[in-house]
Length: 162
Image 1 (cartoon, rainbow, N blue to C red):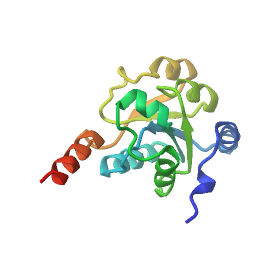
Image 2 (cartoon, rainbow, N blue to C red):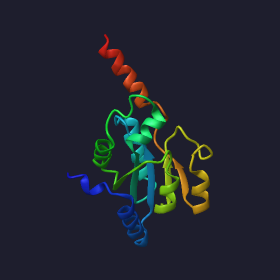
Image 3 (cartoon, rainbow, N blue to C red):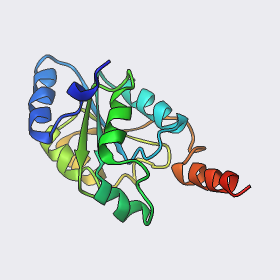
Image 4 (cartoon, one colour):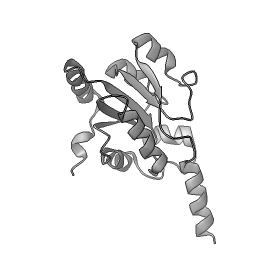
């Protein structure tokens, strides 16, 4: 499967999203760094997809990941992370963004649902005010936060020193 046609710049993606909405399809926006894809990410995205018909995943740019996660991150560059996420069956489109959160993307794409992982509550979602103003429903999806890239990387470092 060629995943490159799933990865779009924001402007063409906004047109695609509008077409889906015009057809009455429910659009879901999920987001994250997805630096070293793991089972928690997959379950989060599967849960997000169940909230609608079309799943759009916004992936933090390399600069954004560095500012959020610190030195040594991301492990994989944005294009590789985007290709991995685009390879998942649940995902229809992927966009890479530079901002620390998806407030701007919510305003431009106007999805029906904004899906966040279980490390959030509806009251701690950074974009909650924008979502409320736009009438975008917030859904908390995925399994309990038992997986993290930080923990996985720490385990790998430990194993490499053993």
